Image (cartoon, rainbow, N blue to C red; front, side, top):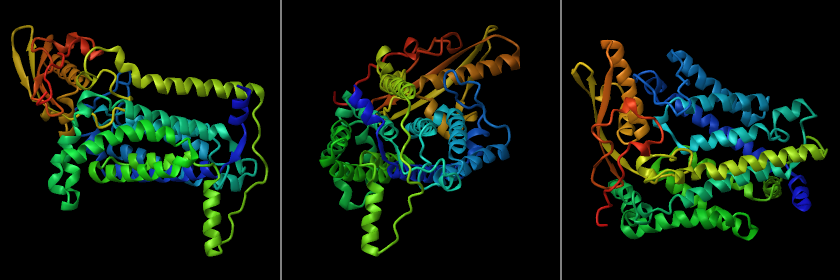
Length: 453
C-alpha cells in the first residue's frame, strides 16, 4: 500500500495535463459556440414545457432570449479562459456550474458526452492543470510548476477507463449481439455512402462493427495501460472515433474521448514530441516557467485525496449498474438508462395520444405535437418518464382551465430496435395517480421479440 501511495504522489511532468487542459478548453469553445447556433430559443423557450430530470424540476430556462444567449456566451468565454489557463480555477468552476445548468434544462436532449464533460469538469476543478503553459503561470510564479503529482493524471485516466469499460459491458445484450440497432442505422444510411463503403452496410461489416466495438472497449481500454500496446490501440481508437463522427454525427464525443486517451501515454510525451519537432526544424525549446518541483502533500492531505478519489471512483463504477435493481428491459422502461454509458443501444419510434377525462365525464383528446418541438415529441413517445411528465403537465393545465379534477391516460405504442410496435402503458392507467419512478411499476413489460427470433 505504501508503494502505491508513493507512486501516486510522485512528481511527474505536467506537460501532458497542460496539453489536455488546452485541448479540453478548445473543445468546450467549439461546443459552446456550436450550441448557440443550434436554435437555443427553439429548444428552451418555444416549447410549452421542458422535460426535467428527476429531482431537478426546479431547473428552468432563462425567461428571455437574450439571457439564454448571454449564458452560452459566458460559457464560451470561460472555455477560452480554461484553454489559456487564465484565472483557470474560477473559469473552471463557473463553466461547470453553467454547463451543468444547461445540461439539466432538457432531458429530451440528453447526451452521454455532455454528462462525460460534466464529470471531467468536476475533476479538473481540483487539478493544477494551469501550472504549465498557462497565463496564470506567467502572471504568478507561485502557480508555475513543470511537475504535478501522478494522481492528477491517474484520476482522469481511471475516469475514462471506467466509461470505456461500461460502454463495452453495456453492449453485451441480446439486441446488440444480434446486430440491432446498428443494422437499422447502417442499412438506413446505405444511400449516403459511396460504393467503396458498401461493406459497412451488409451484415458482415455490421457484425465487425458491433463485435469490434465490444472488443475495443473491453480489451482495448485495459491494454492502454501497457506501453507496448498504447500506440496500436490509440490508432484503432482513432479509426473508430473518426468513423463514429462520419456515420453518426455525435458532436464532440469522438474527439474528446480520443484526446483524453492520450493521458495514458507517458506524462512527458508532449515535451518529447516537441523535442523531436524542434530537432527536425531547429525551433527554440519551450521555456520551463519554473524549475521548482511539485510539492508533496502532507500525510493528512494524502489521506483526504485518496479517500475522495476512492469514493468518487467507486461511485462511477456503481452508478451505471443501478438498472440491475429494476425488473424488465432497461432499453424499454428506461429505469437506470441515464448516466450509464448505454450508448447507441436502442432505436425507438413511437406514437402517443393523450385522453383527459374530467370527473363530470367530459373528455379531451390531446395531440402532444401541438405543445412540443419535433425533437421533444419524437423522444417523448417512447420514454416513460417523458410520457409521465407530459401527462401531469397537461392534467394540471386542464385542471387550471376547467377548475375540475381530471385523469390523464395515454395511448402510446413504441417500436424498439426493429420490433413491431407494442403498447407501452395500459390504456386504463391514470398517469397522474402513479409514482414517477420506477417506470417498471406501470410500464407494460416488453414481450415483442426481434424479427426472426
